[in-house]
Image 1 (cartoon, rainbow, N blue to C red):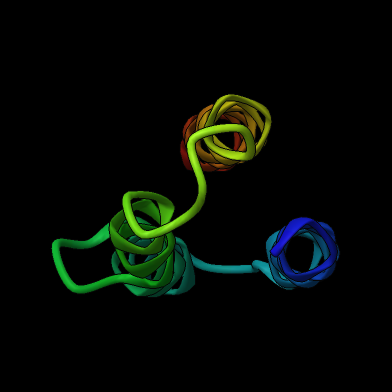
Image 2: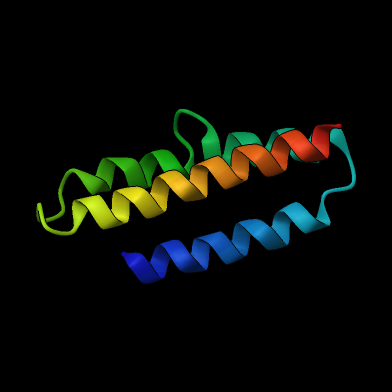
Length: 77
């Protein structure tokens, strides 16, 4: 799952860099941060992982989410 999150992080960064309109910002926000978004799916998977893996992957996932939220806010302004 760690490799998946790293790939996802790269994919998100590429999409963020391509944003040219506010509509695209909103589409990316919904795609990744929405209730049924990609990150929500990973947060659900987190609970099924062994206890030893959860803290590290949870931290990675939270960092990814915060970075995405910050990038979206930056692009909005």
